[in-house]
Length: 111
Ligand SMILES: [Zn+2]
Image 1 (cartoon, rainbow, N blue to C red):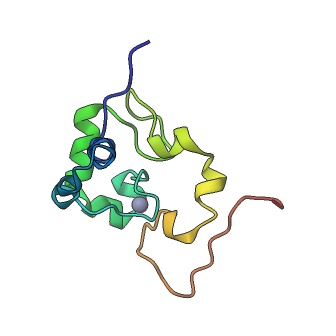
Image 2 (cartoon, rainbow, N blue to C red):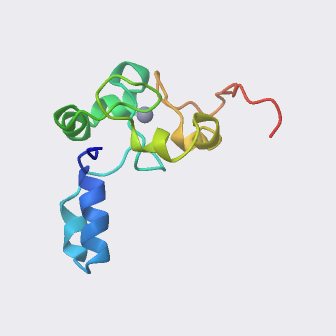
């Protein structure tokens, strides 16, 4: 089985483990608290603005979070369930930007 190509973040993690902290200076900033999350542009204004990260995913064939729109799954979806990462508001998609009084219905029952 072939392996999904590494994202910049995964290269950075490798570099970090090898002791190359400089590698972090060259990374684009993550959009959400979980840096593996990158929504499709139409779902989230913040991810839509992350053009460099979007281009990287497209180039590597990695899907956006919560979708199977490319060859490889999103690393966030691979690591845990949507219910799990969406439990934290900082990881949710914001189509109109974050509003302070916004109530997001999570579809979770009780966990
Ligand atoms: Zn997003």
